[in-house]
Structure formats: C-alpha cells, structure tokens
Length: 191
Image 1: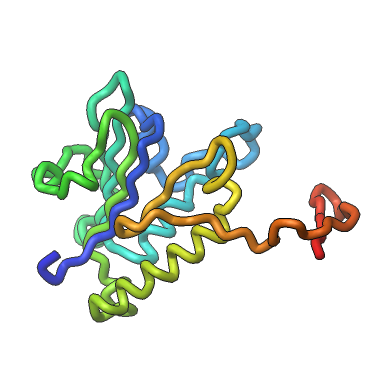
Image 2 (image 1 turned 120 degrees about the horizontal axis):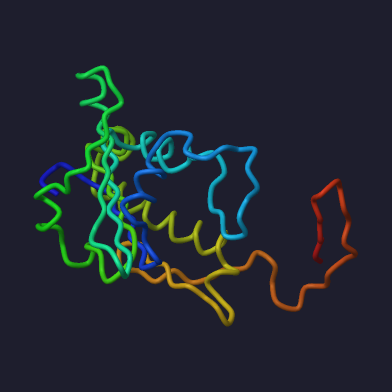
C-alpha cells in the first residue's frame, strides 16, 4: 500500500447497528459484574481496542446489519494526542469507497481496519517478513480454532486469500483418560 501497510479483518456476521457500535467502541464498554450472555465474545470492553493499538495508531470499525446502513467509528491516537481528548470519529471516510472489493462490507458484517501501522512496520520491515507472519498466523489459527473450522457448523477463515485448514493437536484415535476437575475447570487428557 505505497509504503503504508494496513490490516483488515472482515467478517460476514450479523454486524452492529449505529448504537451497538457506538457502545462497543468505548473503552471499558461493559460492566464486568453483569451476567454474561451465552454468545458474549468479550468481558471488559478492552480487547479490540488494546489489541489494535498494540499494532497501529488508527483503529477503524465499519459495521452493517440487514436493517441498517454502514455504521462507522474510529480512534486515531495522533488526534487524541494533538487534541488531548478521547475523540471518536463517526463520519465514514472517503477512502472507504476506494478499498479493494475483497475487503469492503457485504450485506452484513464488520470490518476492522488498522491504519498507521507503525508497530507492524517496526517489527516487519519488509514485505517478506509480513508474508512470513501471515504463514505463522495461518498455522496458529488452524490449531487454536480447529474445532470451529471442522464439523457440521464449521466456519471459514482466510488469511491473505488462503483458506485455513484445521489441525487438531489431538490426533484422531487418541485415547481419552478420565476427566479431572480443578474448581470450575475440567481437564481431559489424551494419549
């Protein structure tokens, strides 16, 4: 991207309305004492923001539901530093319409786009190194999400146009030992 790499993470899920995105972009957006919903992905409302800012200075989130148009929110650390205020941008940027068709929203879903990727540039100073991290990411996701990538309700995840294949660390035919419990944690060993 002309020396300005960016990272896009796109899904085709249900998306978020303007109100939902507005709530979810806030740091610490959930009360940790509230009861968790079954499909709850996060607990403290910090994961997306802190993970993003560990790699970039600008976090952009676009989201669309079946009933709504694209909602947009952006945090830019340069603006926050300059203004000395935690300002969130709500106006969809003009550059969204120039993104490659592979990374724009479809009928529904969410697009997380990192720009000003200074941390990535520090660690991965060449295109070759960026491709290497993509290969490592494919292996990592294939292992950690193997249960989601196989079976009846499997999902599809791609990295740089490569479909991720599941790799289970527990080979088929492994013998399961008895289940043990330590507090609320259940442990099942395999041979």
